[in-house]
Length: 142
Ligand SMILES: [Zn+2]
Image (tube, rainbow, N blue to C red; front, side, top):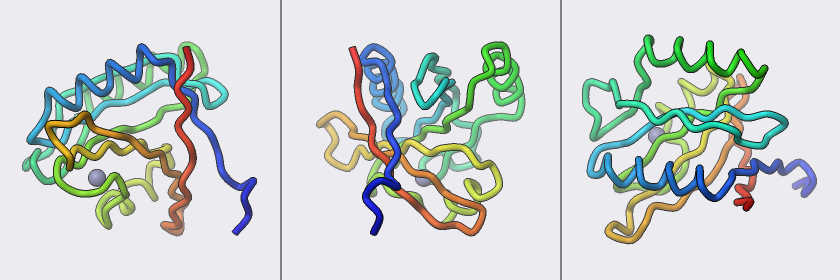
């Protein structure tokens, strides 16, 4: 265990509130979207529809949405963060999440809504090409 291996993602409170509202509106399905970040600080929120065949079981952003978001993030030379929710289970990457994350290389923010109707809470993970999961810290900023 190396304590300083932990990473931090800073999210403005207003964007975090938007994400929570989007996730809550998607319940009981998984909700999803992307964030644009610069130097691990989130600067923009892109809530999207869930294009998965079974949105109660998985979440996917459509190819068209991904291209639109990617092009926008490119404008300010940012990084994409993927976020989605687990309506019933813990905010931890599922085996399927890990398979997808290994290929994409994005940071993953996962919300759990298992205490619904309480608001969902979020955790953030880095998943490397070998599938190793590292948890970071979400810091809300004013
Ligand atoms: Zn998941």
